[in-house]
Length: 291
Image (cartoon, rainbow, N blue to C red; front, side, top):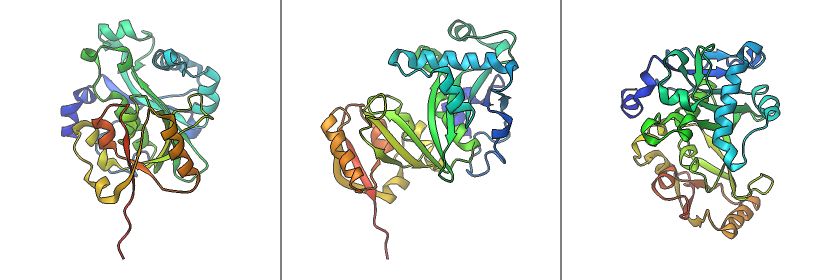
């Protein structure tokens, strides 16, 4: 925990706490019990209920962050999608700031109401699937995308998703991100990233990567330290193939291999973090088990 505080000191602030926006029927039994991690231990989240009109303004503030972050890329959620497909089957997690102590730069940036005790700073939508222990990471953004670097809360987006995965005891996480999106550097650090699709025209953006990962909290601190993931290197080997995120033919070639039953194929979080979004990435496969 001390190492995390050095990287993201805001997390120890008494004015910032995690929140869970969830209907009562979806409350997690024994939250945070699966993954051995002390980052969020002993912190009682703020609970808000999407079925309660008294919590409507909290939802409006979530909408404001999401629309501001994704609207310019034409990826903002319609309200009915947020309600029908996100908060009714799943929940929203993130961090919120005590409204009474909001600094001026946040008051200018965020929609906020003096009638609310807490103002959301981030949101991570996570939805359970029919597969046992598997959840979909549907949406992630934070106020950082609206702030100059000097005012940002370092690691806010990463820690918002980390909290949601930890809180819900998620075993397997499936997610989607665009190859050209900076978010790819964040999403790859929660566990070994298996490629499910490399080219996804059923999505609004065909150049979308669908991934699956087994949540592994041992790798989470590497997001901050940028140290090599030795556990990954012990488990996976280079396949001899690469994928070029900016080349549609390269994405299609890998997609065909996936559809033919080749693989499984994985990406290295260390390589994703170290290079630009346009550079080719090495494809990894599991090492053969001994004996």
